[in-house]
Image (cartoon, rainbow, N blue to C red; front, side, top):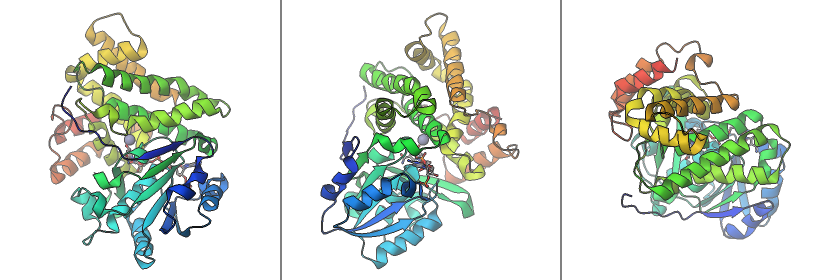
Length: 387
Ligand code: NZQ
Ligand code: ZN
């Protein structure tokens, strides 16, 4: 294994009924801004639980952070933070609300143009950020236990990420019962997103990091096992718990330690959301199979390892196993009712590859992937292979 440093300061309160503990976790003298999305929390009881927990705190609210948190909307929240001397944020929602809150935690203390935070990828330290907590309502991104965030700006068709050690949530509430109200489409997105997070930190090349591999495979197998149950079955607390915790563990930093990582499926996928508004998870299902076919020579050993460990494919050559691994992966996305071709989402796909190539060149993103061989031209070829 490679040398590594691992710090994850987020306190997790897992389980049914944990929302009420916000009353103890958020300092009594804080002026709190509760941030949420389009209103799902108002109809599923989460909002009432949060308000009840914070009945003795001084609270303000901001409703309306959309999926793919929009910069212009976040600026309205930033104004509210500044005019009311807010000093603690509480995100109640999925990855979009949590990411928007992380951006605001940083922007509240940033003196210059807030867009710099993502366009210049400024790393935010604890001194540079407001403290914040989260109540997760959608298992998917892992944002509830990591320090990364992704912000969209429709006017310029950009979707950019940033991070920093000051942007771990102080505390995150993970109550698996919140998934009861999730539409099937969002559950499928959550599974596909978390699954791909593991692949980005696992499907590189063999390093014989046995425990890291088995952590990753454990998360993949858990997601595969619970997927049909959480998608189609009646609500079941045990399955919901496994689903939620697997998604958190997929991107809280642990499985990436000591091993190479890729992240170019996400790099390319974010551009498809920026161009076409396709849900984040679905962009990954479009790009991952095309990517692994395109980078087959470099990834085939780990793909074969994946096929054997995760799909029990024990017969055949490395190439045959690796090929079957990609087929099983694509079939898994299909089992979630997620399509894996760009042309199944938009008719305007023809220039998608060349647009991404130009964008990556403009940004200087010339060498993505674990071998730094995902050049803008390769990214274009991968996108074109996904048509
Ligand atoms: O806005 P509301 O009304 O709450 O509805 C939301 C939204 O429409 C709904 N929803 C959430 N919880 C619900 C619910 N509906 C019913 N019941 C509930 N319990 O779900 C919709 C989608 O929510 P969103 O937060 O956008 O989804 P997700 O958690 O998948 O987040 C996606 C965003 O996270 C970013 C993505 O790029 C995208 O912008 N990511 C963040 C990462 C990170 N910070 O580490 C990593 C990821 O790779 C990803 O890039
Ligand atoms: Zn993701």
